[in-house]
Image (cartoon, rainbow, N blue to C red; front, side, top):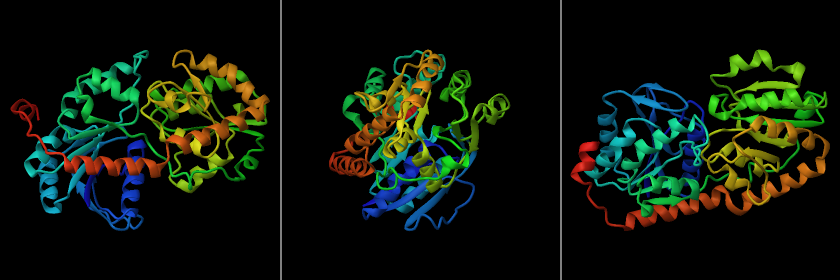
Length: 386
């Protein structure tokens, strides 16, 4: 089977990781995969053998959204005609092409599946969630015209159903982690900073990730020289936060880490992983930390609360994150046996629900189901909206 995958390769974000992991797994299982993504020119990636890449022209792209050029639609249509895939799978990139895909694929008679994973706060508790609610409201009418839409949690599915997406169009297939690569192990990174207890945040340094709440709680807790907080990642707020939270507070700014093995070593050295986000989808960074046997703390934004429910980790309310962390951080310092137990439960939860192998098997079943289902034509109203 030939899959045309439409997604992102840069800049680094969860969408990039998702696309890389799923397409590599499909290649391993014998699928032909063509990867269409926004790039200025075609690049032969030696780390991606067997995957044909097709560049799509763009004006601007970021970790959040992409602006295609006016000719991007024609390039995409022409490429799909030439590739003649059995199915198109779009890991939606928050670009205008997302809204055109149903009409393009109907013209070419190609089944179309989307993965939709913008972050959200289903309880609408945060000011930022207004923007994300608008994103979901904007996309809902168009998602109804995809053959199927993959979402990561029951909460996200219910959210989209309330916005008018037909229930039968939505398939809940959570993110998955390669539990052989991401597993408990030894790492000497703690000795680099003379740390007995290492706390880690990994992700973008942006407003919705709420990193400043973690930094304030850490500074106020004054955990002593034996505890270190490692911040892995970069983003728009890095330059404004770094001058106020530094090594004198036990905070180490690692920056963006492109090397996957090094990221794994960081997690294997960590005692506690903290994700204080106000908005999330289903965090791959959280799942990776859990797979490495790290005790995890995360807010109940998006689906992260589902991941940690029933004792697999500590769940924070997105309100008063700083005060909750201020209470918790000394407990993690003083009770290593508790963190060990939480790490074991975290690993067990991933093995139970969130392995990449199970994820790909569910995707394969969805492909087969869609290919066997007769396709209905788009309504004139849907075409005019495109």
